[in-house]
Length: 287
Image (cartoon, rainbow, N blue to C red; front, side, top):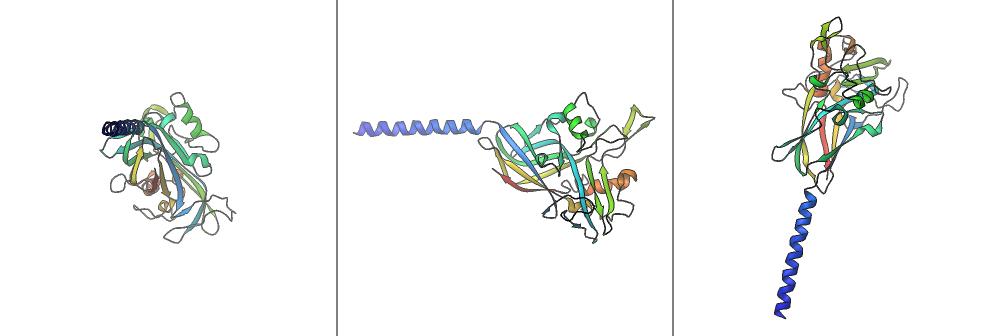
């Protein structure tokens, strides 16, 4: 009997070891991470609408100015996930076809972006770009045909008509009680000679690096976590950097000075020094 009991104990121990090994093997498998973007004004999900819309979200800035949006788009690229040990995992950071996307409030499918085959581990932070890095910000249809097409499609139009690069944010709408048109486009500028691309030099750099600490660790392995990211467009006019009043020389920065555009850029994406989050924050991590 004693030998039988000992044999049973040994078998149980072996099964436990095998089960733990199988669990470890499962945990070590790469998996997907989904980024879900929620575009809000303060805590209210934004609803788009035309000039006469009664359903569009009415937004009121700290200065008491009202406005609503008919179009809301922005580019996310250069995504990196940071493990708890500080290891940085880049996600196709040099390939716009595989690692960049246009978030479009009118297109529900665009609000979720899946990062595939992320190495297993515990992640504490996410970094990404609002816009596109200078070295990739050219309308290169040959190198990145998928992103070029997606950004330039009729329902996105994130190409500058006049330049070689992409729009980073594109906001259309109306403000004040008489529904004056609102048009805010941001993106890096270049200067050159008579359209000669070989002479282009960087003007205003509208690209912004975003750094967000996760509310809880994203665990990749057996689990395919979802990171829910809030983009609060209350910051558009009432950001950490500056307060903007539409109609005060700032409503259409794409046809005003680059300096006026930078005010919006810093409110949306942070100033790159004291503010690395801009309008973005983490709502939750679903493991």
